[in-house]
Length: 116
Image 1 (cartoon, rainbow, N blue to C red):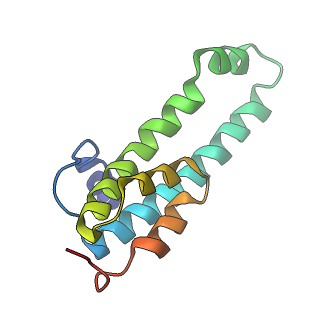
Image 2 (image 1 turned 30 degrees about the vertical axis):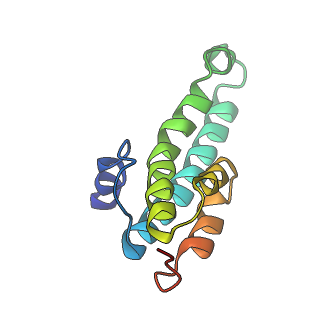
């Protein structure tokens, strides 16, 4: 629970720098959470398949809204990490992909490649 609290603590903070250890935790929580949210949504679809619940959820866009809220802290952390590493902030676009957190962690994990 502490990891989730720390995950959302700087969700809208796009200023500053992100260290390697903190970024690794954020990527792991984002990846595992996204998988769990996907599984949960599929379970809801199976349970409520005959009801109008799923249709209402789809029409309201609840699934994508929850996904955006869940991935926003990773997006902010990636912006901070790119600033620390001296890379383009366009790397944050990888957040949109399902395995984006893992890709970002592998590409932005090293502190030794920091360019000033």
